[in-house]
Image (cartoon, rainbow, N blue to C red):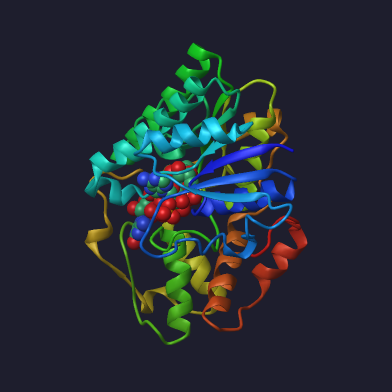
Length: 346
Ligand code: NAP
Ligand code: G4F
C-alpha cells in the first residue's frame, strides 16, 4: 500500500487530495496545525477513527515553521509521496504579513525538502507552485515564461519553486512543481473572491445580507475546478521523471465576468447589490493570468473537465444549498454527469 504525506490537509486542496488518494487505496497522513478550535470541517466527512481496524487516514499536529516535527514525521512515516500544499495562501494578506508569509510559504518548503534529504527517504515531492509567480508576465503563461512576482506571497512561491528545482538537480530528489492557476470549489476559503461572491449571493437570496463589497473587478484569472486540479497533482508524481507543469484551463475571465455569471444564474442583478471598497485593492495587482496547459495535456494526459460556466453553477448551487435554499440545480447535475467518483461531497 502506498503512503502519502500531505501538508495543508485542512485546506481546500488538501481535503480533496486526501479524499482522492484514499479512493486510490493509499494510506494518507496529513499535517495540521494546532488551533484552539477544530479546523477540520473540510475533512470531517471522510475522517475515520485511526484506532479502527484497517484505518488508512492519520492526522498529525505540525507547523511549517517548525522543522523538528516535519523531520520526525518524514522519518517515521517514510512516505513514498509528499504533497506540500500547506501555505499562507492569501495574496492580499501577504502584504500585511510579509515576514510570516516568507517563513511559512517560502522557508516551509525548504524545511520539507531538507527533511527528505536528511532522512534519506526516497519520497517523491510535489510543490504547490502558483500562477501568481508569473505576476506581470504577459499571457499566455507556460513553463518557459519568466517569473515577475507581484506580492510577498508570489515572491515566497518563486523561492519555493527554485528550491524544489535545486533539490531535484542537486540531490536527485524526485521533486516536481505543479504551477497551478486559480482553482475554486465549494470548499474554497471564504475570503477568496469566487467563494466570497457565491456565499454573498446565497446570503442575499436568503435575506441575510444586502450588499457585497469587492475590490478590483477588472483583474482576469484562469479559473478551474479544484477536483480537476487534484488529479493533475497526482499524475505529476506518477511520472517516471520529475518536472514542472502548468495546470490551467487556457481560458481567462474577469472578476466582473464571474460576478455577472453567478448573479445571472441565480436571477439577481449585481448592480443592485455590489459595492466597491478600496480596502480590497492590492498595492500591486496581477492583471491577467491565462495558462497554457499544453505540456500537461501532452505528457500527463490531463485535461480540465469543468468549464468556467459550470464552475460558477457548481459553487452557486452548493452555497445556496448550504444556506437552506433550493438551488437551480444545474451545478449538481453537472457534477453527477462528470462523475468525480472519489468525491464524497462537493
Ligand atoms: P488553503 O485552502 O488556504 O489551505 C492552506 C493550508 O495550509 C491549510 O490547511 C492551512 O491550515 C495550512 N497552513 C497554513 N499555514 C500553516 C502553517 N504555518 N503550518 C502548517 N500548515 C499551515 O489553500 P489551497 O487553496 O488549498 O491551496 C493549496 C496550496 O496550493 C497552497 O500552497 C496554495 O498557495 C497553492 N496554490 C493554490 C491555488 C488555488 O487557486 N487554490 C493556486 C496555486 C497554488 P489551516 O486550515 O489551519 O489554515
Ligand atoms: O480570489 P483571489 O484572492 O485570488 P488570487 O489573488 O488570484 O490568489 C489565488 O490564486 C493564486 C493562483 O494564481 C494562488 F496561488 C493563491 O494562493 C490564491 O489561491 O483574488 C482574485 C482577484 C484578484 O485580482 C483580486 O484583486 O480578485 C480580485 N478581487 C476583487 N475583489 C478580490 C476582491 N479578491 C479578494 N480576495 N477579495 C475581494 O473582495
